[in-house]
Amino acid sequence: MQWPDSLTRLFNITYPVIQAPMLGITTPAMVAEISNNGGLGSLPVGGQPPEKTAALIREVKALTSKPFAVNLFTYEMPPRPHAATFDRMQEFLQFLYGANRLAAPPVDMDSIRIYSYKEQVPVLLAEGIKAVSYTFGMPDAESMAQLKSAGCILTGTATSVAEAAAVAAAGADAVVMQGIEAGGHRGSFLPGELPLVGMQALVRQAVNRTGIPVIAAGGIGDGKGIAAALMLGAAGVQLGSVFLRSPESAAGKAHKEHIAAATDTATRLTRVFTGRWARGIPNLFMEEIEASGLMLNQYPIQDALTQPMRQVARELDNTDFTVMWAGQSAHMAPALPAAVIFRELVTATEKAWSYQ
Ligand SMILES: Cc1cc2nc3c(=O)[nH]c(=O)nc-3n(C[C@H](O)[C@H](O)[C@H](O)COP(=O)(O)O)c2cc1C
Image (cartoon, rainbow, N blue to C red):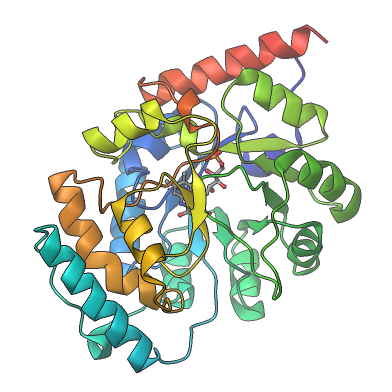
């Protein structure tokens, strides 16, 4: 099989198969395993402090000498939190934690520290990162120029054709078209209603409109899915959920069991954890907050407010309160090492392609 070569040339990789950055799930080991096997591993550092960003990058570098991407959350900083919304939510959360014996401390609104991607860009430049992907918007012109002049390949995220056109016009080298099937946060950034477009419709139309390589994401769970995306004109694919059950995934045991038991209808969109729309497996927290009818804080304030709960729940592997982001094909994720999953995806794609 002749794989499309625009991305393999851009990133200097063997297969145009990208392991999706998954904040809270993707470990440096996962990134390295994919890159060492000829794909592009992606290290998620969205919203992390600069020192942690540097430490994670160095961890990946210690495990691979191959190219890998670093993923940023590129949104403009929000205005100050709305105090009444924050306090009402905090009060309800403390009640909910108490009722469920979860020892999660309250959050002091004034001491929330939000890290902008602008604080991380100097770290990426200092570390000589050559591939940067981003979601929730686009880097500002200055950051784009700095990254480009350092020879960085830039990949934006879009959830509609209009967003793809904006990503291309701002100077990205490639665009991830994130279908509504995808697990995790929606990368949507244009004002207006949330786009709910499926991967197939997005990819076909973006290929015709953008003029830059299109990467298909959302609901791809095996080689046939990859081959289908390539047939649609995608230059490559980005897969996240398929790696959720690997030993290199930071998901806990109970979380992985939920993924294994998931069906095509087992996930849905919610804003309750972070204030941004994201797809995951419903749990007690999602249901209680939605039923409360309370106003949510804007992203990333809601994210900061639920952070202690998620940390405590994670340590206890208490899936009533952890986030379980997952896509519509998450049930296809095998409990195998990331490298094995990756190699099987490549082999199965080549086999599926040869049936044409
Ligand atoms: C657990 C999880 C966490 C995610 N975190 C990020 C992230 O930090 N940055 C990002 O650009 N995309 C993130 N995504 C979205 C992926 O980049 C990608 O769009 C998605 O995984 C593709 O759909 P799939 O999960 O069906 O393969 C995440 C997805 C999942 C499942």
